[in-house]
Length: 126
Image (cartoon, rainbow, N blue to C red; front, side, top):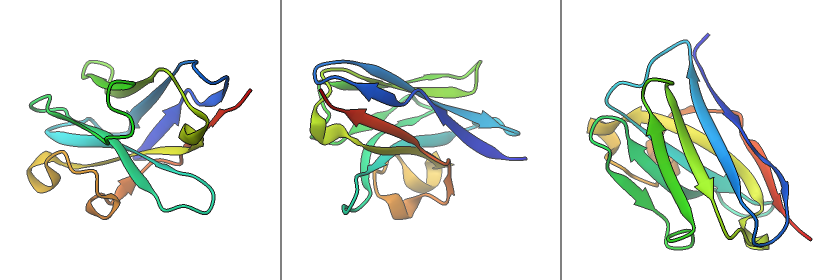
């Protein structure tokens, strides 16, 4: 079964850190872009960060620059999102999605992606 599996979410205090993982199951990332999105209750889904597994290009939303870092481990077929200096406004369900790099570049537009994981909850609260 082809799927993206997210993990690493949880409850963390403001200023804390979490590392999310997005692992491909049943297929291999190959010249693909993997993007992280988040959706808070009552808000639209927004792009957080993306990375191309073919050329390593990355993209970040302004709201997470200097705090979040996206990386890839091609051998493990996994993309990571290291989140530091977390704020309450980072609270959301985080999902990863993938699409061919040739088609989407490192876009952070949700509509550009058609294959999604189930998501993992991140809650930043004291």
